[in-house]
Image (cartoon, rainbow, N blue to C red; front, side):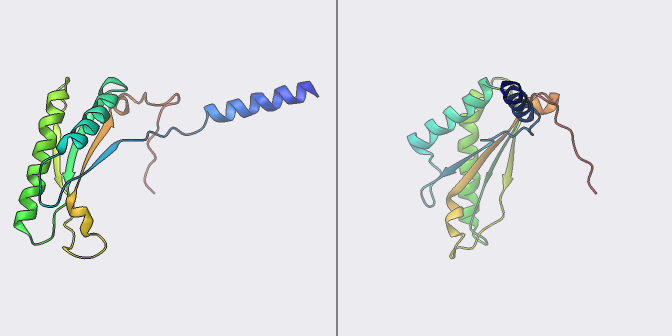
Length: 147
């Protein structure tokens, strides 16, 4: 009885070590006041804490900043670019390894409707440095060939 219990536990433990690796928290979303590019203290502190966790944890290999704007609205697009620049100013002060920061406009959203709220959002995303060395998980990550 005890021997079968030990075998069961060993099989259970070995199945966990072979489980696929999942890295969470790669994106940090920031919500701005309408038509404002100011981060505010709360958003700035949350961004700093999130970035430092990655920087001082597994390291940061890539950084991208993206923002939404209202479709066919030049002012909204200008505000989204200003938002990305304000985020980059904070990231660059914390970016010890001078990882390049990439900027990307997200697909414009309608001024009204269920997705209009996105026009006040920006997203900062990191790729961990361990992806370049394939050391993020206990077992190497293998790239699957596309069918």
